[in-house]
Image 1: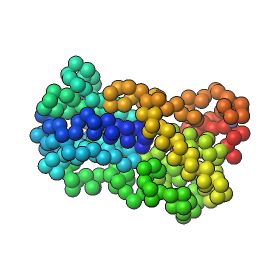
Image 2: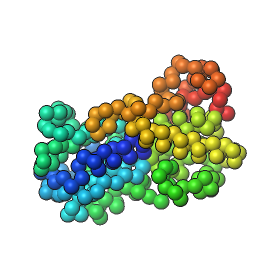
Image 3: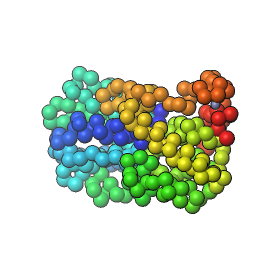
Image 4: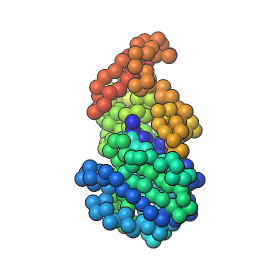
Amino acid sequence: MSVELPEALVLAEQLTISILEKNIKQYDIQDSQRLQKIGFMNKDLKDYDRLLGCKVKSISQRGNTIRIQMSKKMNIVMCPDYGASILYHESDESLPKKYHFKVEFSDGTYLTVRQTGMGLIYSATDTEFADLYVVKRDFSETPSPVGEQEFTFDHFSELLDAKGQNVKAAIVGKTAIVVGLSNAAFQEIIYKAGIHPKRNTSSFTSDEKRNVYDAMKEILNARICSGGKDNWLNLYGEPGRHTPVMGPNMKDKDCPACGSLIEKIAHGGGHVYFCPRCQK
Ligand SMILES: [Zn+2]
């Protein structure tokens, strides 16, 4: 499943609690060819040697991208876009058999990363960090939908008006006016806002814009406060507590608001579940 901004934020907070100030003693890489080929791991595996002896200085996150900033101007960059198992281990007893990247810290604790979909695990200097595609995408001028005061309703409204496009394109992917969201958040937001998935944003009334903005904030904040989605595992292997209000979990169910059967359509490179009555 996909990881979106709320889950990336939860991971960054948990990493801060668990690995700050730790020194990298060793690392191991397995099964990396496919990820290297598509540019999601360093082409030259020797690049990871640069992490040895580095101390974790800070952890930051924007959109789906997590930056572990270290001494010696080095970084580990992770972007678990399409699903990853990123786990912290108190000892070697809980280490998984399969991983793409494993770090052993000098105190005998570990971090393992296994990409279950497409996603990035990079060793980068501060200079290389700035050039990474996911960094340009997420550590960018594009607003974050939560956690930034500048992202007011007026700003959101201006960005929506600047390009009339399908509401999914406005929320998800390359043309999105916010960072960090994918199809899962999209389905929840527009259900909550009462907007049909095929609508074009140029047809939105000011009330509809407000509803989308409020729904986005509410859904994302709820997901963050609940520690992520309930089908996602955090840094300690525990599931989040947020059950999506709309999405694949609503298949063959009735809308809790109006009782209509939830429908599914193929739209914008994925399936979208929605209520045909509540979403206009
Ligand atoms: Zn309904």
